[in-house]
Image (cartoon, rainbow, N blue to C red; front, side):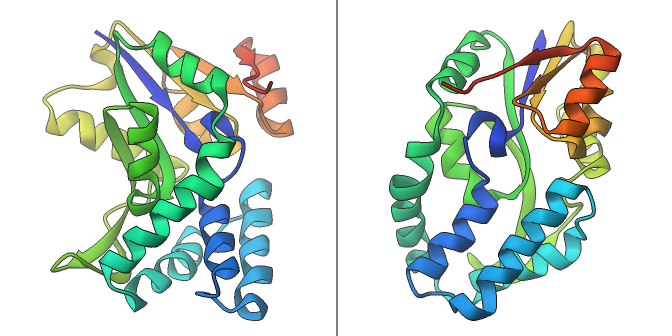
Length: 219
């Protein structure tokens, strides 16, 4: 069996779903613009620079989920999908996912599973490994559980997920991982076919040095 792993933000999507979710809530008046917009942009700059404190970011990102009932969050998410996400889905990304139809397909992303679950379903990707928000009785607490699916945490979470299914990365005939970000180098180094997709400068340079596949899904 072959494994196909897909990063989401700025890879399959022409945007960052975490950043866009916060911006969507700001535009809806759910989050105060003065209090949240600069912080949201600052965290995104840190992510791009490779200096993000993932626990500080998750505190910022997940706390708003604890302030509203799940039904309201789901209603906002449906609007967010329509207004922010579907327009950012690259047609070439849908085609790429389809090319791996015969493989075990997994979306693996640092963005939390509340935000990304519906996006994975939109792509028809059967499995999702993401940062997990904590919930009690179906309502979010504002905390996270387990290991954040970020940098080395992506490797750990993938290994855990495969082990739960009685498998291991090395057991696959081949493994592809598509990503745009140097933050994903720990996992890119582990697969048999690392692919840099519309890569940032650090990943682009690394991929060129290593002779990895480099591609674009941009129109």
